[in-house]
Amino acid sequence: MSFSSADAQSLMEITARPPMYFVRGEGSWLTDDTGKRYLDCIQGWAVNCLGHCPPQLVKALNDQAATLINPSPAFFNEPSTALAKRLTDASCFDRVFFTNSGAEANEGVIKLARKWGQKNKGGAYKIITFNHSFHGRTLATMSASGKAGWDTKFAPQVEGFPKAELNDLASVKALIDDQTVAVMLEPVQGEGGVIPADMAFMKALRELTRENNMLLIVDEVQTGMGRCGELFAYQAYGIEPDIMSLGKGIGSGIPLAAMLAREEVACFEHGDQGGTYNGNPLITAGGVAVFDALTAPGFMESVRLRSEQLSQGLLALSEKWGMKGERGMGLLRALILDKDDGPAIVDAARDRGPEGMLLNAPRPNLLRFMTALNITEDEVKLMLAWLDEVIAKVRS
Ligand code: PMP
Image 1 (cartoon, rainbow, N blue to C red):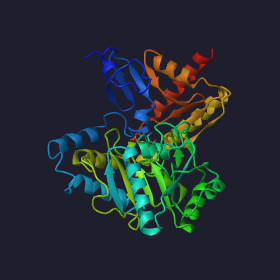
Image 2 (cartoon, rainbow, N blue to C red):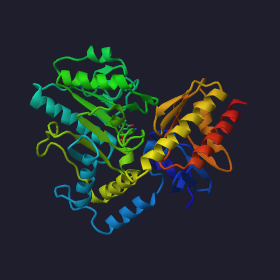
Image 3 (cartoon, rainbow, N blue to C red):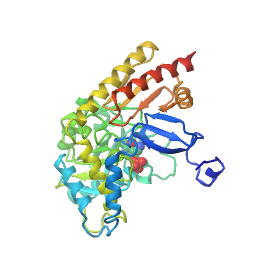
Image 4 (cartoon, helix red, strand yellow):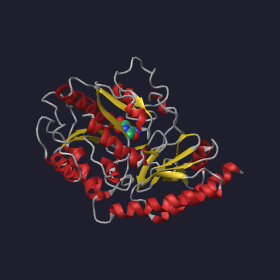
């Protein structure tokens, strides 16, 4: 099949898409309709933790599709209970609710915190979030997000999301009043530019929220499921949050996300939450296959090795080109440029031949890397070599 941009006129124009059409994926590689191959360092925006079309996921989906696709969310099914059990056994949480997207999980998280506030804190409902944070594109999650300009888009916002500065405890304290029910943050701000919460800040937030009878919520849609070198990024901070959202990597490319809560906090009553596809066995069977791959012996160790390799390689490139270093956690990393040529580097990497490379510049002076977690040592080497070549081309 071959595509033309005229075919795409029927799609809503929601983002500037480059004129290429992918028809096939395998591991860290994508192929377009002309047969050109691309080394994919984006992986659907940190989604495909096992790369494209991982055999375990393909098999699990095929087997489940031939067995039972949709009994109804009103009944138990085996894959969703199996996945919920695995997630609670591996985390500090006791209860799981599956959703179809990260934004939908965060909507549920916001509702759960408000419900808890009604039951335990005299109707407190405000959730302190952070400047530059990203929690989704539904109305409440856009209101919770700290993206510049979003406070006036689609006004009026959903009320009750005062914004603090990441890694500045005083700015959080200043916002707390008797209506405050929770603090919600990404352990590493992903869309905001790969900015990790400091260790001391995260620990202090845990103490502060406990002292003030408030909940600590982590949005691990981007950081969870091995992305940051632990199964969940909060584990690297040695804290236990009250609520967590997951997305992206939990399904490695299929529409699966989740919200998790401790027993005392999981206070939804019948009818409070639900939806047609929540906990759908087809999708959660895929989630079980992904979870088992991530938790197989040696898998997380290899994520940490690739992360170290990428981090050192980016640092070497930064030194060579007079850039401003690199940062991140696990395989969510950024190269900080000394000028605003990120978009030019992204374009040149895509257009290089005979094989291209897919990169992302969330800001003009920053390149973000979110490779498959099972990327090989040789692929990381290739990626660093091509990056060097493309920077040389753009800067010549
Ligand atoms: N939270 C975070 C931290 C995210 O990075 C994203 C997606 N970029 C979302 C929520 C929204 O997830 P989804 O696109 O699945 O709605």
